[in-house]
Amino acid sequence: MAKHEVLTAKEIIAEIIEWPVVPLWPHAGKTLGLSRGGTYAAAGRGDIKTIKLGRLKRVPTAWLKQTLGLTATEPTSA
Image (cartoon, rainbow, N blue to C red; front, side, top):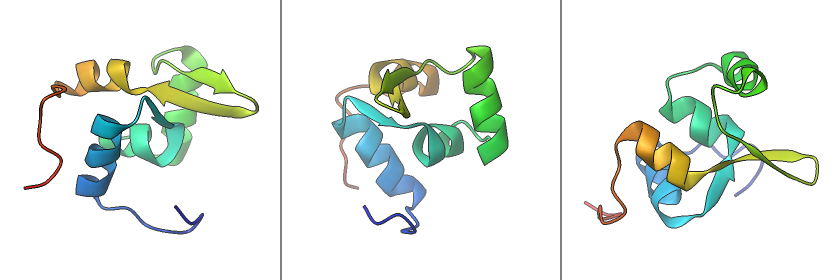
């Protein structure tokens, strides 16, 4: 994904279903209905579960799927 590529909500959900971890912003933040600043503040408070991979914070998709009420068997294309 290019740095300035804008993903649709459908593309973000497909990546959440397929990947073991996703970026904190925009993937987790946008699906949780947060602004960029709100996303990082929530992660800092521990409201969003994150793991550090080097300098980057990633969100485990198992936690995000549970939070969003997604199931592992949902189809990625409609």
